[in-house]
Image (cartoon, rainbow, N blue to C red; front, top):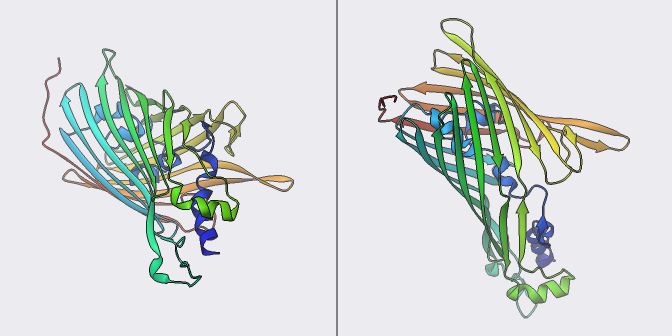
Length: 359
C-alpha cells in the first residue's frame, strides 16, 4: 500500500505527459505570476509594467524603469505553506534606449516522503528506509528591451529556459520565447505580450529502472521519454492614468488573455481560443503609498444542470521609500472559495540613477 500511494502522487503529475503532443495548462507554474504588485492587481499589468518585473510580464516594459539598476526578490507560499514560490530578478539600463534583465523562478514542494522502499525484502516495515525528494519547477528568463524609432513605442523579448525536476523519477528541459510591445501616448498605456511565441518545448526524461517491478505489480503503464508543447498565448492590455488631485492619482487597467491550447473553463471558451479578462486598479498617494485591488481568473465550473462563476479577487499595498519598494498582496491562488488566502511580499530596489542624454 505505501508503494501504491507514492506512485499515485508521483505519476498523477505524469499522466498528462505520456504522449508527445500539445498539453493544456503546460508549464502552468509560470501563470502564478511574480511580484506582489502584479498579484494585487490580479496580473493586470501588461500595459503598465515599468520595473524589473517586466522581464516576466512584458519585456517591453523594461524600457520604462527609472533607475540604472533594479533588483527584486519575492517569496510566497501556497496551500498552507506546502508549495513555495520564489523569485530573484535584476535589470540593467544599458543606455537611454535599451535594457537587459534576468529572472529566476522556482515553484516547488520539498520533503516529500518516498515510501517505495519502506518494506524490506523480508516483508518488514522499516521507517529508516524512507527517503525524501522534491518536485520543483525552475525557469530562467533573459530579457532585452529597446525603444523603437516611433515615439512612445518599445519592444522586448524574453528567452525562457525551463527545468522541471520530480526527484529521481523524471526531469524535463524546455526552451521558449516571449515577445512584448508597449506604447505610451499621453496618459494612455497599451501593451501586448505574446508568451511562448514559437511554442515552448519540454523534453521529458523518465527514470523507470528502479521502479519497473513496482509498475508491473501495481498495473501502471511504464512511461517513456516524451515531448510536451506549450502553445502561444497572447495577452493585451490597456491602462490610463488619472490625476485626481495634487497628491492622488489613479490608474485602472484591463488585460485580456487569449490562449490557444484547447477549451478551458474560462469566461469565454471554444476549441480554438479561450478568453480570460483581468481587471486591476492602483491608487497612488504622492508616489509613496499605493493601494491596489484586482479581480481575475474568471471560470465557469459545471455544476449538474448549471454553471457556477468563480473568480479570484485580490488586494494589496505598496510603499516606496528612498527607491526601496515593498509590496504586499493578499490573494487566493484559485478562486474566491474557502481555500486559504496567501500573503505575498516582494521587495525591489533601484540605485545608481543616471541621466542619459536624449538624442
